[in-house]
View 1 (cartoon, rainbow, N blue to C red):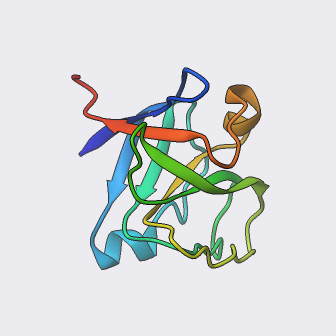
View 2: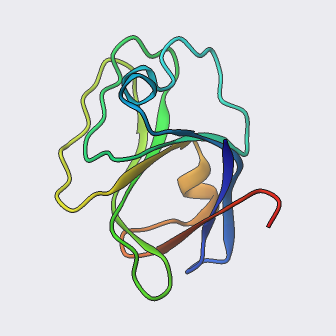
Length: 123
């Protein structure tokens, strides 16, 4: 299943073709082995409060998001351009992680405490 992710606070689309990883195998495998991640693409890992970049070939922008608030899911931590073979921090309260193409955070101005809303692509 694919979803769209919006930064409600900034009025920006983070990605329109984001794949969901919700079972243990999908969450472990993630984007390992991918040679590229197209603009508008990404991976939502749920549940998730930490990531690894082992066996990755591309850097990523990563958003750790918490439980829903009145406007959406708050961004708890932002990692811009995390490189392969790194380990991300454990983020308390994180319910899911969005892995996005490098440059997405800068392009959208996404920051901690911004509200993220997830939606079906047809919506």
